[in-house]
Image (tube, rainbow over all chains, first blue to last red; front, side):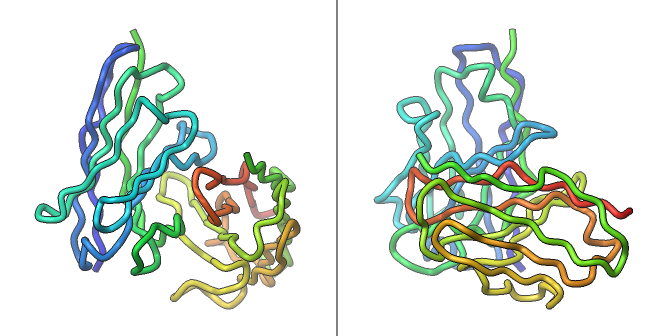
Length: 123
Length: 108
């Protein structure tokens, strides 16, 4: 059974940094792209970033490009999101999600989602 | 950037009734359209991808159709467990991976 567990969410001041982690199990992790999607509580979904199975290809939403970095450690079955220069508008629940297809590049179609971790950016 | 216009933003229907939700991308996305269901306090669940392919385990009362710039999610016979917010998503290429604003479905 696919299992995704996010961690690292916290209260941080504007301009601060945070690193989220997502531990995966139940599938051959390195064969699948992974994504981060966020949701302001009570609001809609926003795709943030994706990374290929090998880690060699990364993609970002314009709203986070240059501030966030996605990475993965296939030996630990974990994907990360390093978030720098955080802003109030980055406040959201951050979900990691598994790509539906086993292929080289991300399809950005996600079939399994973790429970999410809350990031609050406030002074 | 692709904008995904989803309508209506909310609706209520009777148990057993038919529900239709539309999603219109601002530019053509071929069939790269998915539908998600998010129940209150829960994680989004993939219902349909490639516009009309039912994800494994999803009841057959859910149906997706359309291509290009006009897509529809239909629930043929609404059940109490279908109360949720439904989102469409384009996934044809990054960074143009975009979700619609959501449609909240309630029981009348």
